[in-house]
Image 1: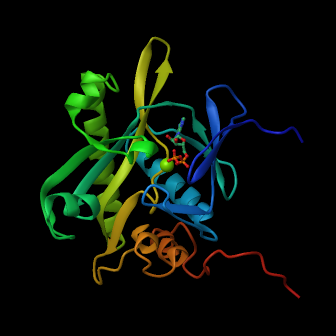
Image 2 (image 1 turned 60 degrees about the vertical axis):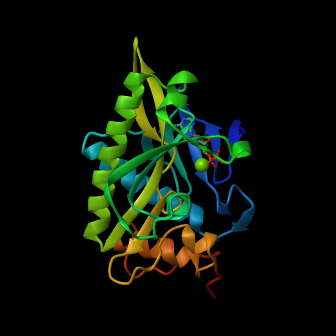
Length: 253
Ligand SMILES: Nc1ncnc2c1ncn2[C@@H]1O[C@H](COP(=O)(O)OP(=O)(O)O)[C@@H](O)[C@H]1O
Ligand SMILES: [Mg+2]
């Protein structure tokens, strides 16, 4: 079999050249990193869960008319996506204070915000993805004013969709991060939701118990990350209710 060309290897995924121009294959690894990769581990089955969950959310978004990069699922760990020019921003939407916002502004984690707050961080690991304002984004030419209007509207639509889906299965969407890419269609450019939407990029709390079902379980050593992600997948019907967490293959005698 011909060897595929690797385009990029990041912290959580590997990108390969896709079968047609303008497509790429996203391979979801089991690697978990936090605090700008200072904390690292390999979590059995995480890649499989995130691949399936991201597919689920991207498909749902497409159904309500939000454009995404997702084309089709290829296998347990891989999906075919549209290649996009990634805008170098992490677009964060917060419904409740948590994480860096709580630290920065001294607001208790879990405090409901007066309205969803959208923040932008410059995507650069060596700088620790610093928070930037729209002034920086415009002055450095990372995105135009029209792009920023579109990004805000995409971010809020994703928030409404994800909040609703999560609420339906007893989960509070505290915050999440997305990446936006540009695709070109003839003379026009369009912005689409790219990268991934998964418990790696969201904060998800059980509504009843407050139990964390996202990457904070890994960041803060709160138990099994695979169990947490499996719980999210089961509630959403992405995994059969009865399935056990995905682990290494076992021999059947
Ligand atoms: N549709 C797309 N087209 C091109 N690049 C993409 C697309 N979706 C995601 N990416 C990029 O692929 C990489 C995914 O790998 P990841 O492990 O998340 O990387 P990182 O460590 O940089 O976050 C990211 O750099 C992301 O910006
Ligand atoms: Mg990433």
